[in-house]
Every structure is written in C-alpha cells, then in structure tokens.
Image 1 (cartoon, rainbow, N blue to C red):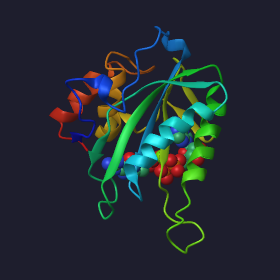
Image 2 (image 1 turned 120 degrees about the vertical axis):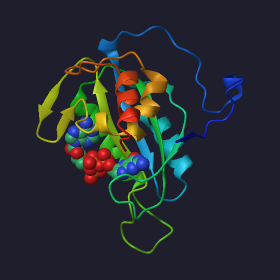
Image 3 (image 1 turned 60 degrees about the vertical axis):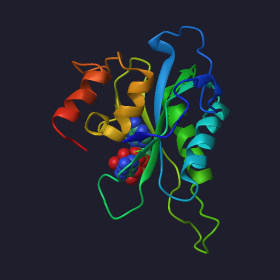
Amino acid sequence: MRPLSLNVENPKEDAWYLEPGPIIPMTQKAYVALGSNMGDRTGNVLLGARALNGIEGVRVIATSRLYETDPVGNPDQPRFINAAAELEVSCNARQLLDGLLEIERRFGRDRSKEQRWGPRTLDLDLLLFRDQRIDEPGLTVPHPRMAQRRFVLEPLCDLAPAVVPPGWNRNIRQALEALTQGAGA
Ligand code: A4P
Ligand code: MG
C-alpha cells in the first residue's frame, strides 16, 4: 500500500499533520479506523476524522497517514482510502460507537445519485477503547477482524506501534509484520 500523505520531509507543512499533544495514558485513549471507497474518498476520510471531534467526550489527538488500498472481501468494488485516528475519550465505548454510527449516517447519503440512499461513503470502526475488552450485542472491542486486516493495522501502526491490544500477545507492529510474512490481506 502507498501512503498518500506526501510531505515526509517536513510533516508540519502537511495538512494532515497535528502537533504532538500532551502525553495521554492508554486508559483515556481510543482508536478508530476510517475507510471510504465512494465519492470523494479522501475528503470523506478527512472530514470524517474532523467530525469525530463533534462527539461529546471525544477529542482527536492524532491521525495516521492516508493509505490507498485494494478492496478486501468483495474485490469487485473501487479501491479504498483508509486511515486511523487516535482519540482522547471521556465518554464510554457505547457513546463513542453511537457517535460513529451517527457520523456514518451523515456521510452515507450519496446525493449525486437519485437513489434514496446511495452506497456508504464512510466506514468508521471502533478498534480499541481504553484498555477494555467488550463483548456485547452490537459492540466488540478490540475490533474482532482488525488483526487480519492490513488496511487497519498499517494506519494504526503510524499511531500506536507499541500498543498491545487487550487479549493479544503482540503489539500492533508485530501483528502487521506477521501479516506481511503470511502475505495476508
Ligand atoms: N459493531 C460491533 N463492534 C463494532 C466495532 N468495534 N466497531 C457493530 C464498529 N462497529 C461495531 O458495522 C455493523 C455493526 O457492527 C455496527 O452497527 C455495530 O453495531 P458495519 O461497519 O456496518 O459492518 P460492515 O461494514 O457491514 O461489516 P464489517 O465486517 O465490519 O466490515 P468492515 O470491517 O467495515 O469492512 N477493504 C479495504 N481495502 N478497506 C476497507 O476499509 N472495508 C470493508 C468493510 C471491506 N473491505 C475493505 C474495507
Ligand atoms: Mg465496518
């Protein structure tokens, strides 16, 4: 995959750059995956990341680079733009998920087509929430499929390479390396 954020030499000139913030403990952090393969894919991801700040009890503290990725699952669809965001959270996981679903709904309407509801233009997955393991109807954290997905782990590795998700025996970088060695998706 190719990172789309270009200004590696001088990241501060990159629109996608945020100043490093204060050190925040893992117990106040959450990580979200963003993906889009319809419409203005990059705009959807950038605006989607910004919209996360509108959820009560959420502050975006960093964002990954943007990655253009081959579709996994159903290959007969356009390529995705994927990214990840690091959040400082004072809400609970259910409130964050509800906020993500609400943002998805706002982005989900394809106004350029005449269908009532077009294809979903923004997918937001809750990857990690504090150091919690959650298994409730409609909410599983860590996200159950994230370990198999390069389009999730590669952006997340920009933000949290050394984080070991609860219940895992390796960190994000090691999980990404294992995927590379196994030539996973
Ligand atoms: N839900 C439970 N746990 C969570 C969680 N941790 N985060 C429930 C988010 N949602 C969670 O979500 C369906 C329901 O899952 C939610 O209502 C929530 O209650 P969804 O995102 O609509 O599910 P989905 O998209 O139909 O299924 P799935 O398997 O989550 O699909 P993904 O993971 O969203 O995959 N290829 C590339 N290269 N890049 C991509 O971004 N994305 C997909 C969609 C396929 N291929 C891709 C990409
Ligand atoms: Mg999803």
